[in-house]
Length: 103
Image (cartoon, rainbow, N blue to C red; front, top):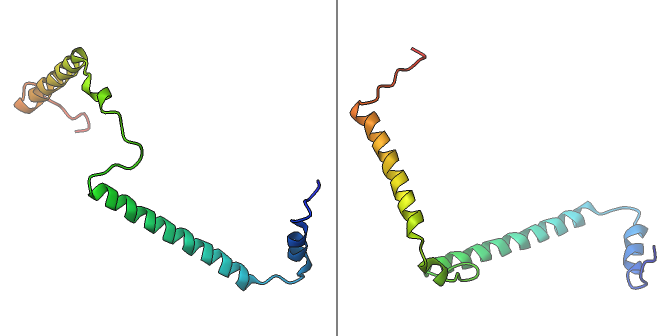
């Protein structure tokens, strides 16, 4: 593999030091972590401010796609929910009696 000439000095400098400096490594690691933390905090503050002002995060949605509703689907969902409510009422009123098999 051919390494470009402008990268070789940096690689040689890394390999020439016989003794590594752990404090330098920790400093770099903590510095990058701190920069990332500050970036995350700033991003969250900006996102919170945007939402608090009533804005949206991301691309705005096309509102025309929500204006067309299929009433047949809405009616089927409404009927399903009414059937479930009727079944729940049967349990509440005592028409159905549940016997616990563990007792």
